[in-house]
Image 1 (cartoon, rainbow, N blue to C red):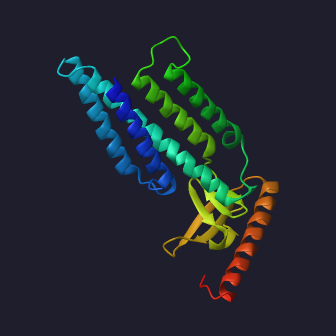
Image 2 (image 1 turned 180 degrees about the vertical axis):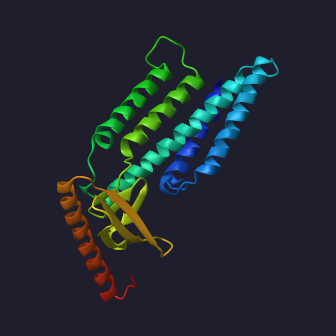
Image 3 (image 1 turned 60 degrees about the vertical axis):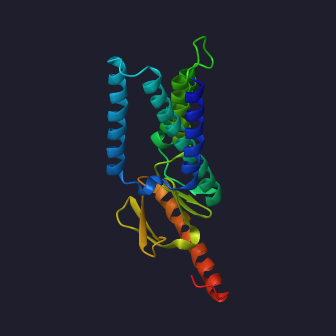
Length: 237
């Protein structure tokens, strides 16, 4: 039992560093390799459960594997939450983001339920014995709730750039904007690969369209000023 606790703790803190380092980025994730990895892990864990049912291995083997798996997920999500929080701080004050019930309140309610269920799952506040698998699975739910609380599925126009999912676009990288449709604002920016990246902002409300247009105009003017300052100081844009 002590060994499982130790391995789970090491997995959690190890993958917390992985998540906070930015190696895994939600905006550029390729889902097919992750689906393959999830299927492989599911097969391994199922195989361990079958082996236990057939009495080929002791109960501590599948239980320990599940505990380490949950601890890995918890550490990864905690680390990604820390990185996303830092990105929000780096992006500055929020100027504009599309408002609707689901993005403003629905996600927050779901995140709160995950956190509360995670606390319940740990059995820390119950008379049930605390086990590694209960503790790690509870922490994974809490971490998912915290990440869902911080994450927003819509672009956020902020004072120092744009934040979309876990992608921060500095204001000096903004190039232009246009309304491709009556309700869709396209914002072009320069990516790290020196290519054009386009962010699509869905703004269905007429009053909000005016706010979005004014905000992106302000950011584009600021971006041009920064590029002129860089040019005048002898730094290539």
